[in-house]
Image (cartoon, rainbow, N blue to C red):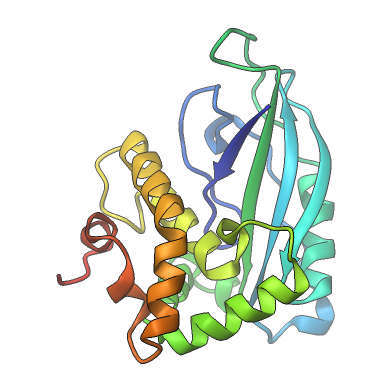
Length: 216
């Protein structure tokens, strides 16, 4: 089974590709209901799921969530997702192991695009000290999960996979940049630990900084 990182920004937008890998352009993806008790709270939830070649979805699980209610809402929504079927070949397996991050924001209903931009900007320009605290808590809560599932890194992946947030010319370029990010995560975490006063964006690989329009 292959792992597919499904890019997401503000309640589940996906990287657009062909029928395989699964794409948001040909999918039915109802958004999660915003938890009433968290109506004024910003947060996110990361889920894993299996997408089958008949378009169905199974084994939806919450990998991490800033609030339990966000995880419950994300899981409930994803269980109803359906994708365009594809033919099984040597390069297109019958089942895809996918992951996706859903970002919850109270301002989404008013201006989803601008709010998502703000989420990405604040993420990129957070101090390394904040990322260090996040990673320490993430490792304590989810010791078996990879670094790529940590909230900041998951959001960075999502932004790279969506051309609206990172200036890559096509989806393949976004996937290439995302692979660079994943390979660099241990070094990024180490550099932030060593220099907590630096901005997260400043320890990203140069190609990623360029994609986000960050001055070198």
